Image (cartoon, rainbow, N blue to C red; front, side, top):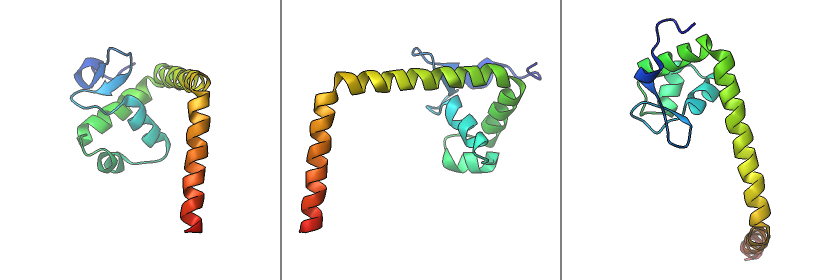
Length: 113
């Protein structure tokens, strides 16, 4: 059930497979997570000034009418992000370890100064 809301009117899929609100760089994930966190549509508009109130309401309505599908998409994007994080941490572990050591040393020198 989509209550007469045409997905293509307000959401577009990027070549990478993520969903963005049409005409913006703001992701479906951002709006849904803000909604989950208890933000009102007006607060979401304040957090994302590029969105109109109508876009936020349409996105929330779409989510509420397609919750299972959207939740599955959100879970898949979280799993993909976690996999990428793990891969990058593994691939660049020496660099990251060195960077962390240099940042720690720099903080300590600032504290001692």
